[in-house]
Length: 183
Image (cartoon, rainbow, N blue to C red):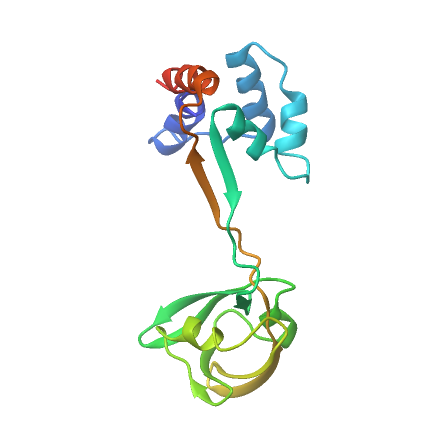
C-alpha cells in the first residue's frame, strides 16, 4: 500500500494531478515488490467470485476465525439512517425482503403492523417476529404514504470474530515475521 501511495497516490492528490491507477498497475507493482508472479492470487482474490480461504490463512497464524451471525434474527435487508427522529432507508439490498416488497432507498418508515417506527426502535420491533413472518410496512415516499406487504428473512449479515489461540508456538513465528515486515 505504501508503494502504491508513493508511485500513484501522491501525484494524484498533489497540485500536479496524477493519472490514477489501474488494476494492471497494481498487479505489476505487487509482482515487482514481491519478485513473484501473482496472477493466480489476483485471479482468485480480485477477478474471481469464490470466497477467499481466510479461515485457513488466519489458522496458519494461530488465529481462529468464526462466523457468529444469528441465523434466526429477522431482517428487512436494509441499511437505515437517522432523519431527525425518523427512520429513513439509506440502502435497500437487492433481492432482500424490503426490495422484494417494493421499498426503496429514501423511503421513511412510519409503521410496522400499526406500530410506530422511529430511529431508535426498528430493531426492537423486528425482534417481535421470526424470519418468514409477513408484516405490513407503512412508509412515506416523498410526500406519499404507501403500504408494503413484506416477508421477513433471516439476517444474512456476517458477524466475524478473530480470536488468537493460546500459545500457538509454530504460528507465533509466522505472525511475528509478518508483523515485522509491516514497517
